[in-house]
Length: 206
Image 1 (cartoon, helix red, strand yellow):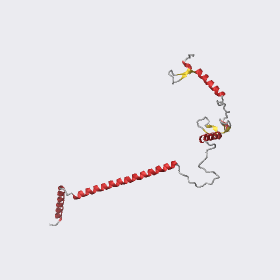
Image 2 (tube, rainbow, N blue to C red):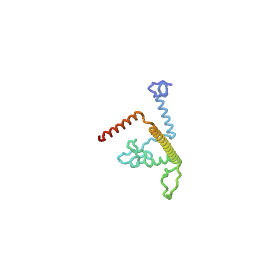
Image 3 (tube, helix red, strand yellow):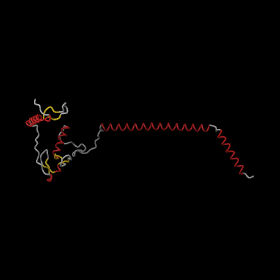
Image 4 (cartoon, one colour):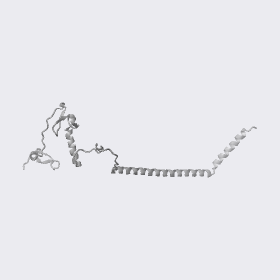
């Protein structure tokens, strides 16, 4: 074991001293040996880049097939310098078909279920409702039933309150009719009658 300066070691926050266990030189040698083993085993992809074509020519080289295509053969990609995708539309279609086949388990492009076959006649076919549609219909029916129940309960409460108010008004009216006039009311009534008689006497000729 050879002691080396601290500057020869990288950082490692998981260790107590904050430094890596292996020095930089040993890390480089280990990585180089691992890369050589992968290269010999054929697991290292080629780093050879296709020949670049000036953008003024109106063509671009696909990074998958390596062929030069017109610019309209590439989709948009705002993360790239030229604003175009690195794959041409043909390579992108093959990639999408392969991913779909791996996900579904069937080869070929995704079928369009909303379009009937050209050779088959279009006929009206009763399509059974799906489980989601059935659940949605059940929830709608439940909401309608709850709304109807709330309306019925509101009507019952309103009728009871109206009946109670009418009964209270009738009771007040009956008490007012049955209750005899007070002494002050009688005095006022007598004064009014006397004033009326006096006015009649004053208007008669002497």
